[in-house]
Image 1: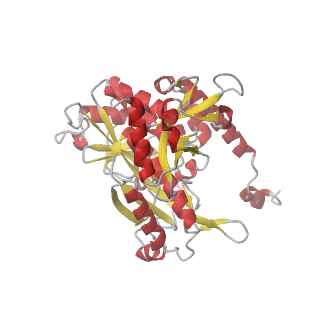
Image 2 (image 1 turned 120 degrees about the vertical axis):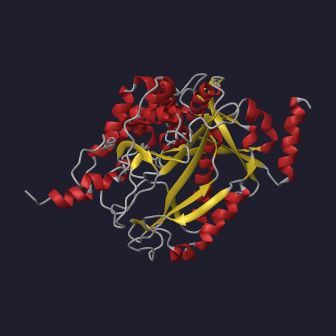
Image 3 (image 1 turned 60 degrees about the horizontal axis):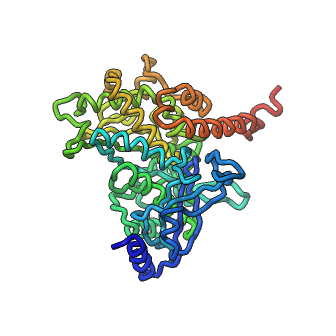
Length: 446
């Protein structure tokens, strides 16, 4: 079959499903989905040239306002085409970013593929299981954000079945839509904060896992809006409750399909390379925080604050341990759970950086600290010596990324420079903001 015939066959298949348009979706440097609708008839153009966008209109491209490289082209990945249940007549397509006919260096999806190519040269494959946590919010009559379910106020809300019953229509709509989109669902539960839920689905290879999470968020936004709700990936919308994480379960297989990290006879069930990978994560954790926890609000989650439920899962300290949720690296069943990311991250950039740091650990034969076999919150309460803490705010994390020359080299200077510049602007804006807390505390105090 020639190229044009292949495209025509795909077009005919899509039209037979009632598809008339393609939603060409990419993400900006912040990890926010962007795109446009284009007619399915011109599929070959969207694949080979790409759908065009004004480059400077997209956060973080670094493209100029004129010239051959001022246009951003999102090239459709054919294998990602699938009908969107919540947009009848429309097929979703993931896009790679190009400019001037070349891969765009500030495209996070292209960046992830670059790191994965280095992994493939070893004959290895990275598998990632992503755990999306999120809140269901809305606005009150006076414009204040609040938990949408006003009856969701148990002291310890984890696994609250009454809240699931009250929100069954939304959850069933999510379940049905995700299944139609090919998600292999594993569980849906109420998490440890009022209005907080988690939907788990099967792991995938790293690039597919990142694409799937972007599709998950797009679906959740659409389904929530349909039910008069707001899907929120804000890490910590409630001051006195746990925040939302986006934990990565990581494993690598070699060319023969053998688990690189696993060793039943090894400490924590990990191989030497598994420990080295963990050591790389801990060595570069401060810089990784900028990409895995990229907002001002992220560091409200990454704090040792009290939780109304009496429980906090915040991974504050740079440590690792077997099935230890108080560590930023948790080992379980011969794989590594990286607990630093939150749902505000650019998932492509976060996975790329995580992999690059772990591979550094292997290549430099890094040795991690002694595994932690105790609850670090209890250890702190006893006043004992603690492991080093993660950055306490976005400014510290951004400065750490700027100073981590090896990680920036592995990811690409163009992306890192653009990201650091935008995030420094964000921090400056936050630093200049006068909050209600400040006014109430200081306005008439002196």
